[in-house]
Image (cartoon, rainbow, N blue to C red; front, side):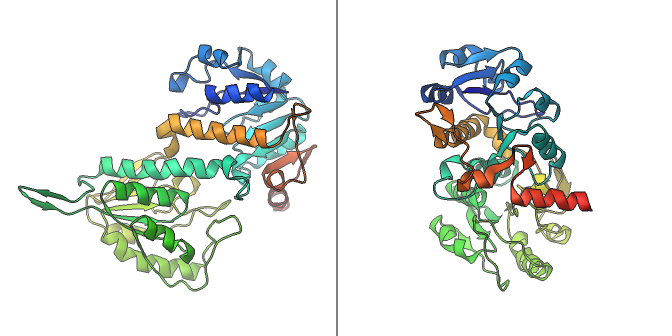
Length: 382
């Protein structure tokens, strides 16, 4: 089968979908691999290195798309690029299907089998393909490093001839993959760390990293079958905000990571809570691209509110693009390899498989993912 790996075109994106080391794995698997010329330029990887790894270098992108059985990208494709894909081609990338309705309809109309990697279910067997966890892990690390660089205070306690410097206080809201990495990174830097999550089940994980778990009685909460936090009621959100206000006010750094999969991020830190923080404090809103956890945060901007700096920079994993690309590349390969039929030398789109059922959005000219299909139908009826 022919695999074509397309160069990223999103403004400011420095990550790449597949690194040369992964090309070698695809070739050993029995794939004919071609990459778009200049695919590794953002990381200083030349076409020659890709060629040595066993890939052909494609100068004509449209021809390569037309001959590809499988197309691998990082971000979603443009609708215009779909015109060059042949019916039945498999497209693998992020697709943001909850929001990109026109793109999903276009993929269906072109009879493309579209795999949305962020929709892969969070099961044990699918961990090696979990792009959300891979990138969130790096995002949590970057959030702390950004905060440390922006802060006028150091993180660790220091005993000096001039006296003892108290450690910085860091409050992490949301203890998923990103939150856990943020906690671990802040602790390594020497900060005092507190963390809160609506799921009491994560308390032991927080404590295992040396942080304090903040308990707030919200009544019945929990998580989805995929491990995501369930959405809170308006009453629960208000209780949470009031309880967290004092923790934010006592913190030098607040990092918010709370997201509800497929929905707008909940507003957790209000303007009143920001106003209660001391000048010089830092807030990093990791959910800014999905609506934001912090009132006043703006995508790709750093906003000063009475001396409190709110960092709303998007694509945090892209700030450590070498390792972000390495992890995404491995996830993409693991997905293809898992469904590779070695005897036939081809990708086997096993429609009955749990992973495919979760990640396959369009197939055979239709939207086949039940959640996205229902969402599109509601939008059409509205």
